[in-house]
Amino acid sequence: MTQLQIFLEKLHHTYGITDAGQVADYIPELSKANPDWFGISVVTTDGQVFNIGDTAKNFTIQSISKVFAYGLALEDHGREVLFEKVGVEPTGDPFNSIIRLDEGSHRPYNPMINAGAIATTSLLKGDGPTDKLNRLLKMFEHYTGHEVFIDMPTFISERATGHRNRAMAHLMLNFGMIDKDIDAALDLYFQQCAVMVNCCDLATMAATLANHGTNPITQVRAVSEDYVRDLLSVMYTCGMYNRAGEWAYRVGIPAKSGVSGGILAVVPGKAGIATFSPPIDDNGNSVRGLRVFEALSKQYNLHMFDLSMGRCIFCI
Ligand code: GLU
Image (cartoon, rainbow, N blue to C red; front, side):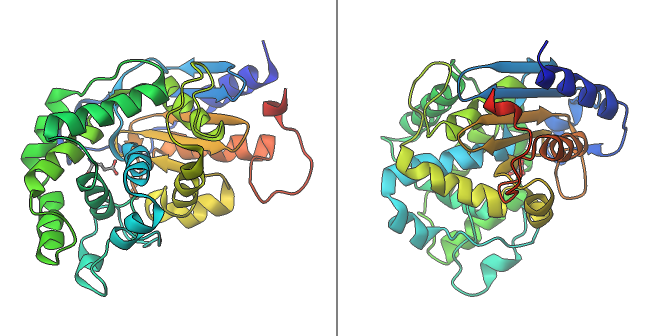
């Protein structure tokens, strides 16, 4: 067994016993998750895969989808057009905050908060709703390396209860920031959030970004290399809800988390890492996930600004 596998097993054992955090329930279907589910996966850019725990358990991707939808929107429209519609500034506010939409330019601050993500998804090209959805699913398939499906109960559950997201879409329509067909945009956004993945898929998706946009296992390109840096930049500054600053300080690699309990992070050029554990803290980040990433970053000197030449297991 490799050093890395041994270390992952140790982390899984150490942090598996914590019972801090709560399973999200504001989308009713999410409350059915088992708080004990816990997985850690690492996929390297040379195609090695390390798994421990519940890494094959399917769950809905939720906010983590925002990174990848942003990549598709960049491919569809280019950097400057997209920048006019959605900014790249962190807010320090909760992911579902509506307040800043009503001030200044009315442009959503960044594509990782709900307002920015809904605006981004509303821009995706396609010949009607089915074609747009199929383009999104195809993109996710390139990242994961297999067919992906939407969890219908979660989609329906969020569509029925996502009043805050609906309110944001109406506000953006009021300011002329998104197209008038907001119901279609919201449906597509709720569908992208309900795409099912497992922990190993998330690590593979992160490894694809680490590998310049090409899936390191299938060798299929998922996103143009030109835009990988855009995705990593917004992940680094805005990917961890209103803990993005502390994450950048303590862990120091681009990452994105979702309210269903997933976190993925990219070690550029080296690997993708993912954790899955449904109990989340007040910011929306998985409690066990945060602890695992802090420990991994410390152990392997993953912080991007750590200039000491330390152990780097991903260099094997
Ligand atoms: N679908 C969720 C929402 O819009 C995603 C939130 C998240 O994972 O942060 O509320």
